[in-house]
Length: 449
Image (cartoon, rainbow, N blue to C red; front, side, top):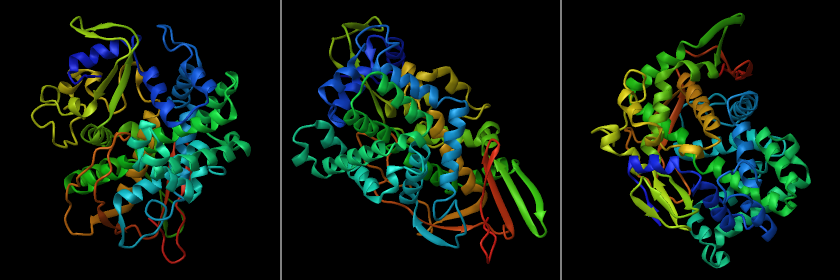
């Protein structure tokens, strides 16, 4: 196995995507995790060993995901579905709270899991509406490293193995009841390609496991990390509220009731500071290792001989903590690092230096959706709620490495107290993404902010 942590060599890897294959690496991991039938495994391998990988089951599936999640109508629809679900989830974001205490990361995980899976799989048929499925995926996540070994999983990864079976059974029911017909375009597009290639019903059910990993292994922890960095820095909190508040449109259609409308898509497009904080959160917290398979003997950068059949890993944390790229404060959280007037040195490094969503020809297809959903929760929290640590002081939580997770959960959660901001009495909030708004309903005793 080769480990590549030099910026110049990573750039060379990205340029040689035809011989250093992410697709082949993905199939090897899928073989261990989703337990495909022999026919399903062969279908996944179709046309992965050639330089022209424009066709084949896996290349076409990935292309369909990129199209469905690229900026455009499909991304708008799935983002609005996320917003609707988030605003219906009990607790902060959806309604009135008064100095309530909750664990920050656990709350963020539950909220994003619900809204994310509602948006992707369809709210009416979402398997993750079943607590047993949520628990099963949690068991998979905890035992992922042993499960990925695929050696006596019933014994060495028993809880994770049982959790995987729960997911397989849930998606069997999902497809038998044609839940995919009410799903997002990304699910429907994948299903159409699966049908075109004659993929069996068993393999179709198991392939949803991969979507779950992409949806839930990383994004669920981005939101609480971003809120931690913002609320633990009062000056940053004030600056972000000032920036975002410019997008509040005020009206008074009901006497005595102020209506605040916010188009979060406009905030995402026009607020450079919140975009910088998001990118810096990912830079500081990303720990993923992107894999490749060497398809044939390759001379990397004209110097390093890579043997056919070998594995290659690119650890993002090494690149994100490089002083030659990010400067002497590379290990610090700098919310302004990606601001237009401060990012010139960063831009000189090129896109290969920033690996939060992969790199080269293998960028994560869900990167735009992940960005949108994180900004949705962050903007609503900024405008509506104050957040303070229950212990009185903010403390940087420690993290534990995890093989499947890009953004790590802390070893110990942060208990926080949340309350509505003062001055928001008799306010009705409407949040939208583009043209479609979602109202935050007023409490009979008090208008929710």
